Image (cartoon, rainbow, N blue to C red):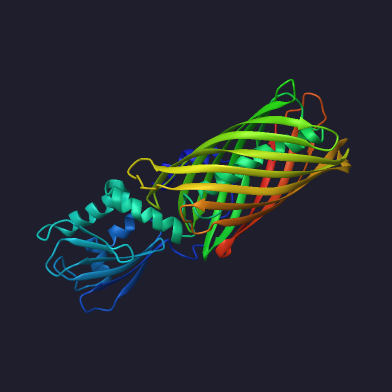
Length: 414
């Protein structure tokens, strides 16, 4: 089923990597029937949370189980502690989130437990909008692996980083005189591996971008669309986001050049395993001050402030209640240098970057992150070459609360 749901994402990626090590499950439940010893269950699909009450499943764990037996469960629902129980001789499923004071009941006392289970799963899929809105607020605050926000592999983080990536490449390349005025299309397959509070997360990312400086060289356009597949301990999440920005050269002299880029961006993410679907949209303004040190090197100071809002969106059976608003500041520096070494008479260009990102607004699990990047590339000087530029690099990310990981990338410009 997951292959069918996410096949379109896999087809868009042209890199492969190793699966995660399944060191930790997404959902954990301690379930007890009557006075029998409790059982610990783990899941990596939200449908299995309700599926634990299938009669056949219950009989495997508790041979004395029947549809009239008392059942009580404590569930870690992605960092939120909840309680589920059936009273004796009852078909009504009671659901409680003690920390939020939320109490729900599904099914009827004289009804079947299968019907109550199905009603509970429907609520988690989005039918109970108030419940989902409260849960999603807790998920982004307490979960280190939420697909939408609060960690380096979430859609919000991907969108913020993408906003400055396209901006910095356009300006630093023009400052060093290695970018033509004609439009260029770039593809940069990436593979990342992260450790997020004990969870192993693999990221497969394929950014597609287009950059074009107009004849005046004082204004250019940047368009990028990263496709992303995230594997969190076997639970899959797919996302795509699109950003469009106009790059303006405000002023330029022998000492520095100043560029501004207003940008808008929107993205969507969905996961059948997490039971999540959300839309993020917003925009911001970036500033890039380029200081040429000499003919072969420059330093850039990059600052960006942006605002993003999250709304629910229905994809297949899932419609989560995400309702977030965050202002994001990303500030950093970049050093670019044309090296004396060359490949096929094409000089190598090295780039080193550092960036800090701060999130303000609705509370997130991780609100500060640092990225350190290095890359090496060269332009193809051959006439009528199919590939104009090659680049390889690595990024190390360290966020608060111990979240960290690396991202490897290979870039091609046509």
